[in-house]
Length: 453
Image (tube, rainbow, N blue to C red; front, side, top):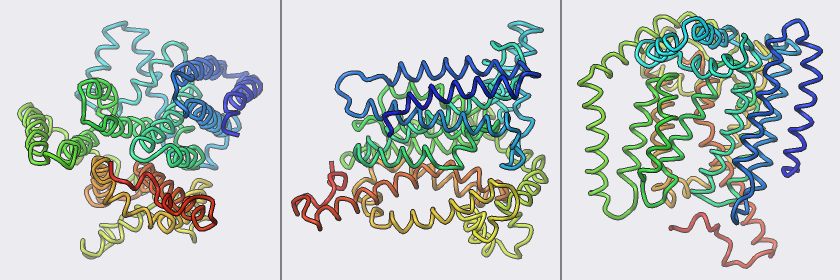
């Protein structure tokens, strides 16, 4: 089934062409997304083609095109069939920022491009997604929401490959395939990828950096560092505070790079990260960024409350709770489990999907419970940067921002860790069942992934 991914993509493309001619005949700018769909699919097909002796090459290609096709279909359903209000689309006008930048480039040439570059890097760092969307919009020559949706769909499909390779690096191929299938068909990720919010671009950038931190078992190489820079810059201009969380993850990578020489690694890692922090502090970047976080909270606080009310994904915990001691546990529950099952039929359809998925998250915790020993004991060295980032990210949104109105969206950032957990749990149960039924020798009952390197 997975091997049919390319065929599914070709059928999807022709279906998009037919539907585009029907739904967008009065808005030809939207039709400019169709060549981009084919171009991005061709690039991915070339990069994921079977090379060398990689036994997973065919699977990666197939699962990518499945993920890409599903997200493209959802984008057409949202904006071609005009069902965006049914599913919820709180960043409804964000895609226009891309065309505003592209239009500025048309009018002012390189000076316009340079001014926008300076603005997203040094003035309004939380709006850098417009720069990414402006590039295909500029080439297309018109405002197109489907172009933004296509770019996001491509990013969501790439995230599947990142999760697969990360899981294969830490565990094994069988576990990685399960994790890739989970993220491919996870409805919240499909919705984030198909819509015109920046969330999926941020998640891809963050997890690509995490993957590069652990990709090399021998340590973080200069080649890995160079490959990380574009993703780190992309995260910086879209969600600048996440860079500090990724820096902390990098520190953990240096601290526990191996079980040997941990003192040397700790000193080396601390010196590098401290030097970076001193440089940022000396230039005023840290103080400026935290001031921006405070202004961001003040500016969008009412918007968050509106989203919480309409989607059921959270509430203003700290203004309603009488004590922080009680509010933090409540906020934690909302972050991980809102919307709750009894809220499935209130708000948007996205709220119903979120409620169903949260039931599945509980199942994930139950299924993945036997894998906790593997995560926190046998594979702690490899997983340390991921643990650090996810704990800090969740903690910041539970406590630091004092609002979990967008819990559904931000929770998706740490969901790849849950996918890996349940994939390990499923693989372990499969091997245990095979041993019980006599399909394998008793000595192979334990997974290869639980053996220390």
